[in-house]
Length: 231
Image (cartoon, rainbow, N blue to C red; front, side):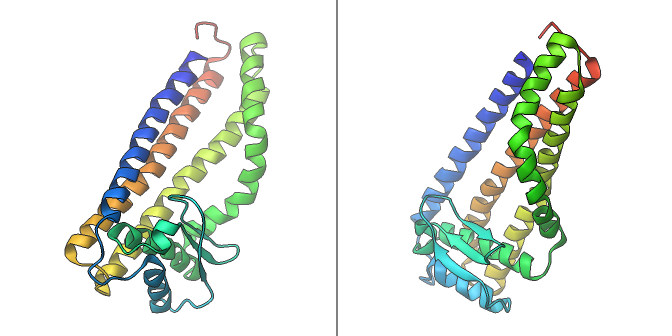
C-alpha cells in the first residue's frame, strides 16, 4: 500500500502549492482597487442583467474563497471579500460565479451533465472509502478482487466527475473575462490580473483531477496484477 500513500502525498503537495499560490494571488490583487470603483456584488448584478438573468439572487456567505453558484436555489454565493470588495480579484470571482449562472440559464451541456451526476456520486462517495479499504485488504490477504473492483468503479466515477468539472470551470472563466472586456468593466491591466487569478483558481481543479487519475491508475494496476506482496 506504500504506492497509494506516495501518490497521495505527491499530489497533496502539489495541491497545497497551488492553493498557496491562489491565495497569494488573490491577496495581491485584492489590494488593487478597480478604476470603476464597483463592488463584487455590483459587478455580479450587472453581469446577470446583461445576460437577461433576473431570477438569480446574489448573497454573501461566510469564509474565504467560499464563492460558488448553487443551481438548486439559483444563488450566486460570494464571500465577504468578494461581495464587498472593489478589487481585481473581487471582479474576477464575482464574474466567474455569474459565469456559472449564465451556463445554467443557457443549458450548457457540460454543466447539465455534471449536475446529473451529483446524486449518484453522492451515494457512491458514502461507500467508496470503505469499499476501497476492505477491497485492498481482501486482495492482499485472499486475492479476491470483487470488493476492490466495486470500490474502483466508484472511484472511477468520482474521477470522471473531477474531469467533467474542468471544462465547466474554464468556460465560466472564459465567459467572465469576455464579458468584463466587452463591457469595459476592467482596464487592460485589471483584466490581466483577473485572468491570472482565475487561471490559478482553475489549476486547483486540474491538480485535484490529476491526483484522482493517478490514484485510479494505481488501483487499476492492483486489479490487473492480482495479489501482490511487494508493496
